[in-house]
Each structure stands twice: as C-alpha cells, then as structure tokens.
Length: 379
Image 1: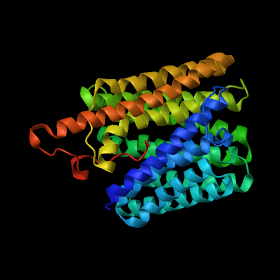
Image 2: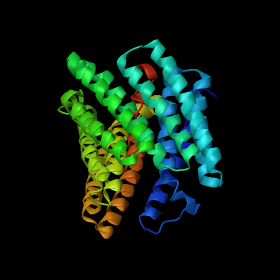
Image 3: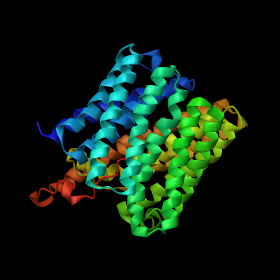
Image 4: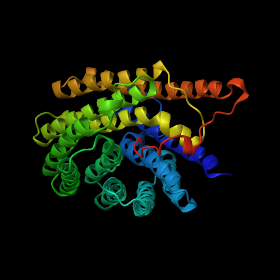
C-alpha cells in the first residue's frame, strides 16, 4: 500500500476524534446526545486538539516529509484517540500524544533543515508546543497547565504558514521583527500560564490579539479575498478567521481580569473554533486532494458552514459575556451543525470533483505537483 493509501485510515482516526470531541462538548453544554463514554465530556479538549488536530497536522507534515518514520506522529495521535474513546487509560493517551508531538517536532525540524527560514522556525516552535503541553498535563494532572502550549501549537502552526505566504506582500523588515516578537510573547504566555494562569492568560491574550491584527494587515488573503471562485473563498474565510483571532485576544484579557465567568469559554472557542476551524474550512479544498488523491470542486455551498460557524459562535460569545445559559446552549448546538455542514460540503465537493475528473474519459485527479504545498494548519 502506498503512503497515500495509508493516509485514509489515519484521517478516519482523526475524524473519530472530531466526532467524539464534538459529542462531548454538546453533552458538556447540557444537550442530550449519545456518547460512548461519559468521560468524553472531560476529554473534549484532548480529543479535539490532540486527537483531531494532532492527527491532521502531523499527517500533512508527514506527507511533506515523505518518509515512513514521519507517519509515526499521526499513528500515535490516532492511537491516543482510540485510547481516549474506548479505554479508561488517560495516562497512556497522554503519553501517546506526547510521542506524537515528539515525532512531529522531529519531522518539522528535518523540514526546517531543508528550508531554514523564519516561517519554518515558527512551525518548529509550534510543533514543540504540542508534546510540551501533553507532558505538562501528565505531570500536573490538570488540563489548564497544557492549555497555553496547546493553543500555541495550533496558532503558531497556522501563523507560520501564513507568514510564508505573506512574503508575496513583501512586509517590511520591521513587520517581520514584530511578528517574531508576538510569537515569542504567546510562547512566554504559555509558559507563564502553567505557573500563574491569570498572568499567562493576559500575556497570551495580548499576543493573540496583536497577531490577529498583524495577519489582517500582512496576510496575502487581503489580496486574494477580492478574487472570484475558490481563491476568493479561501481569502475571505482566512480574513474571517483572523478577525476571530483578534477578538479572542480581547476576550482572553477579560478572562484574565475575571470580568465574567463565561469569558473562559468565549475566549477559548473564539481562537480554537473561530480562528482554527476557519483555517480548516479555508484550506480543505487544497489539503484533501493532496493528502488523499481525490479531486474536489469548489461550490457555493462551501459558504454555508463558514456562515453557520461565525453566526453560532457570535451567539455563543454574546451568551457567555451576558450570562445567558439557554442562548449559550443554542450557540454550541449551532457550532456542531456548522461542523456537520462542513463534512457534508466536503463530501459534495468530492462528488462534484469526481464527476468533473471523468468528463471526456480524462483522468484529472490531482497530483502533489499540481497544487501548492498545503498549509499545515487546518489544520
């Protein structure tokens, strides 16, 4: 079996983590949904960040590396998912996530040696945050000790890829130095978070908000958002995500100051759903064809999950700030509907792509050389 053939079961493992994590989140919000184990409520973040994003990001990075050992990262992430979903062995699951992150860091380091540039260094730092977070959780027994580093894992992975493409906008040297300072700030915030959470949250909030503004100013999405079709869809969705990142920084500062109990939920989901999932929605038409060798065709329905996610997340944030539990529950349900709509939209794009690929008897299936190297953050 080729590497590409082995990616499908690994991606399926990531989707299992997404499903279990979403169901656990719905149950945590008070919605009655079926779950395999009630522990999925407490393991919601581990399933979403470690299981789903850990699998998808490490799978893409392994595809870029192209060697068999690199697939140890997604294999360990899927094994951790199976342990979280079906077994009562959280220590083993965290060890597997730490192993996945260690391999991912090694792979990213090897890729950095191939292309020793600032963006690849940022990707390396982001990858290292994954196992650090897992080990901190394991050592402390508290998820919050890992939270800052796991946020950095996702944010720096995305920001590093966007930094690479921002070269086309030719940012001034001062702008690149500012990016480095902001990346260092969010890493410092994660370290402080593990020792003194309010201080770490404040530092992280400042860094995330400023990084969101930097991306809104310097990301090439500012140009591509004006285009039609898939290019415009990706650009506009990216800008929506950068807006959520900026807002997450403001909300996190409010959380650090203790302004409202619901600001924890609002801040975390503004960055982890609003920012990170917007990146997933935007880049799926690029990543999936390369990873799995399936053609996809952009369609107008791709906007449905984007609109649902932002609308339901805005409702959730307002409910968190105002203390409206019933509205919060509706927002959480809307988030889940948006993710389900994304899966359906992706399947529709595959069906449309296969139809187009067979027109006239021609094989128009994508090859890795026919696409730009996919961004790592979708993750």
